[in-house]
Image (tube, rainbow, N blue to C red; front, side, top):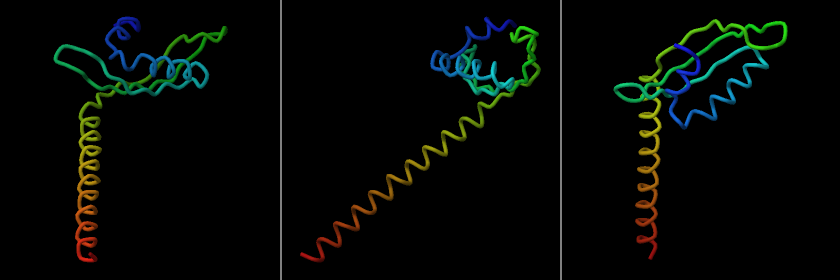
Length: 107
């Protein structure tokens, strides 16, 4: 698979974040980016980490790294955020109910 064919599979939301990660890697020599790909069967999350070697002119020559599937972790993180939002909403509702009781008792 070529780099350009991989980019065509990116979720459009990821394009700007990818560009920034790639530009930063040209300075640091390290690449670490989590992104969504649109592939058969839906959206998949991946994490790519690499160390980039440059030629004598400072252009990227090779990258040695790994790609990990992180779809399940991303789903778990989203489920946790949703649970936290639900707990916060319940806490607000409980606080409102307590305030109503207190105000009713004081009147």
